[in-house]
Image 1 (cartoon, helix red, strand yellow):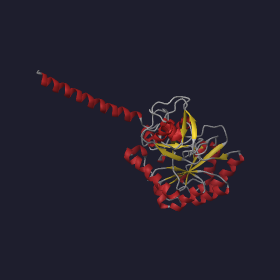
Image 2: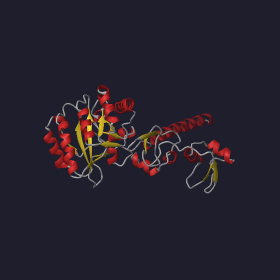
Image 3: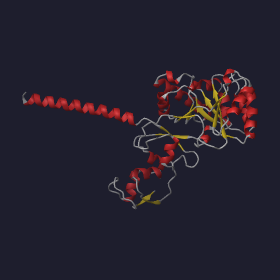
Image 4: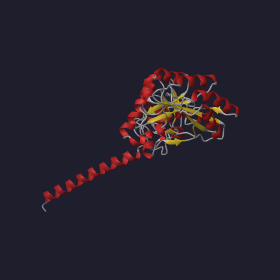
Length: 348
């Protein structure tokens, strides 16, 4: 083989190897940046006498206003898992739920079996519902999802987690009210199975004809046993007012935590993140509502900041709502990558 052909062969081989490595790298990168699968919750992890009343809303929502009146009369907050189609069919009832301070969750758009639909359809079902509810109420359905028919598998949980819903909420007590059973049977099912941290499943539709009559008795009897009523967020110790952040290129959990005055461990807890080094661009993160501000703190006119272990100029700039370029200029820094622990920086 002459020298020219040998060079062509080597060049072709190198090209093939580079292509292979690039493809392999993209595969490995994709596989490591997926969000954690949604965590399946069937009851709260507590010994305290608390109970979460939850209602699934389908297409008709016949009993919503009666249910809301009873909850208001007894000063009880509950959690409603909403469908997008139902919200379009009875928008004012959905606004009433939100206006009375109840928690909202995502229950899909048209109530399909999530175990039987594609990734694209799963994403569409979740997004259309979130967009519909947010437009109607100004509130998000995140961070909680309830699978239609209670049908899920590992694939569903991964897809739901990727979509920004780290919690898939099931139940402790099924009233089977959708079968049209009597109010007495519904009450008995709850009272016979009640346990601290229980999640009770009920429905808002016409098929659940016994629920409006069962609810006042159920609430009164549970209160007499010392139970208090909580939303799912309260049961899981999540923020009562949920705000979200969409991960951008260059973000780390550390920089996001600094920006929103919280901690990496708190962000990991809220978002069911098992590896705090792995987040992906476009991933939706839940931010703390109480116990941390949800907007970056405004900068003072001029402050002095002492560099701590783990700090970068990028993270400091995020924390004080300024830019790396501004800090570099104000402090006459020649290399933005080199700052030292104990160094004092002027922040404007």
